[in-house]
Structures are given as structure tokens and as C-alpha cells.
Image 1 (cartoon, rainbow, N blue to C red):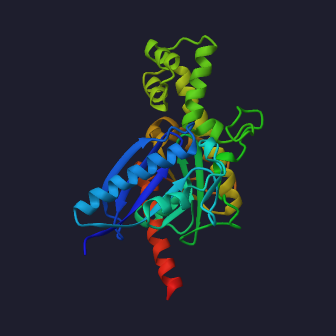
Image 2 (cartoon, rainbow, N blue to C red):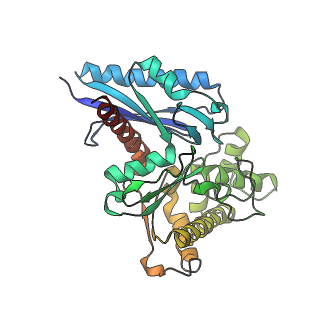
Length: 330
């Protein structure tokens, strides 16, 4: 019998990323494709099915077996039916039964969980979370996701389809609008979309910007990486956007640390690559906001798994799901 693996998939607002992992967390393949979030959900499913089949066929050619798929999806989910209820960054997926349709197409079990929760599972399996009992996870991508780990286990609340949604904690009721429809959410200050929106607003206000940045805005190709580059060249508006990101993250985490009585967080996601631009402002806020805590004992870790953390977690979700099904059948 060949090597058994599960596919871990992270479906974000910008990219779909996937990888093959064995039961011990060893990675054997990695793929990435655009999520094209504004397409009909059937088209996203078709792309996902084909990408999974490609991985399965390639692994079978090496005499391996793919046993299951784990999906991490941004938004509120109905895990019983495998359905996306609501996703600010995947608006056309609302109500779509993604997991059962993918399972039917591939002929292997598919398990689904919120993308920030699979980030937490990845850190618990192979990252910083292995060594800390209680911590908050934060993912900075197109949006901002969150999870909570207590006593070494992912906290699932009342299983309402969402939990740990730190991105939709309001840090400034008079702040910018959020994709969820609310005003002043953390996500409106500390996400990839908040960076591109902020620099685009500066462009329309007539603020002086580098020509290459204006070209990216005018062509519709602006990304958070452009804003990162502008900040590193000293552009004041870009630097201010990262300052605001750090302030908002510090305020949200400080409030949650105070409420929960814990003092550790793990931060990941693509936008966390700009760590040095926002982290000092985050820590400065944490020195003054949570008065109940000793600032010297607060620990903020950058994920040790980089952008692959949700893939590790989604694959771990699949392995856990298989074990639970095997237990139910005995």
C-alpha cells in the first residue's frame, strides 16, 4: 500500500491554496490558484474539483492514496450540511453546499471548517500552539479571522457556525465601513482589503503617490503588497495605514485578553508578512490598553508555519474527521 495523505485546502478571498499532508504533518505537494471570489459558486467548485483531482492523480502516480479533503473557508458555515451560510469575502458562496458537492465529485470524504479555525488547528498540530494551553489566533488576509484555543483545544462555542470572529469586533464605531455591513470593525482597519481601500482613497483625494502605485490603482491590479512597498519607501499614507493596523490589533487583543484572562496570541495570514510595519504599533497599544495585565508577560507570536498554517490545519481536520468516522463505525 502506498503512502496515505489528506488534502488540506484554504479558500480565501483572493487565492485557493492546497497541499498534501500525511498523518504526521509531513507536506508532499503545494498548489495555488485564484479564487475569483466574484464568480458563480459552481465555477469555484469546478476549479476546486479539478485542482484536487490533479493532486490525487499525481499522488496516485507515486503509488500514494488520498483519503480525504479538509476545507478551510472564510465566513459563517453550517458544518452539519457542509454549507457556506455567509462569507464577506466570498459573497457568492452564500447558501452553497460546498462540502457535499465536492465529496460527491471526488468520491472521498470532505470535512469543512472556518478558515481561522483551521489556522488554529494547524498551529496546534505543528506550530506555536503545541506549547501554549490558552491563546488567541488571528489571521490577516483579505479579511481578518480569529480563533480561540483553551486548554489545548479549539473552542467551538455553541456551534453556531462562527466563533472567535475577532475581525468583526468593533474598535472604532465611527471608523470605516466593513464588508460585513458594520462600521469600524477590526477588519476595516487591519486587513489586506483595508490597506488597498485606504491607499485607493488617498489616490481619489489627490494625495501625491508614486507613479507605479497610481498605475496599479488605475489598472485595478492594486494588492496589499503594493501598499507594503510604498510603506517601505517611506510613503506617509502607507505608513499610517500600517500604524492604524497595529493600533487596531492591539486594541482588539487587549480587550480580549482582559475579558478572557489570557496573555498569548499567534498571528498569521498573508498580510502578516508586513510584521515589522505594524507590530511595533501593536505592542505600543498593548502596553497601555489592558490595564489588568502585566505588559511584560504578554506574548505575541508570528506563526512559525507561515502562509501554510491553514493548510496544515485543514489537512489535520481531514485526518481527525476520518478518525471520528472510524470510531463511529466500531
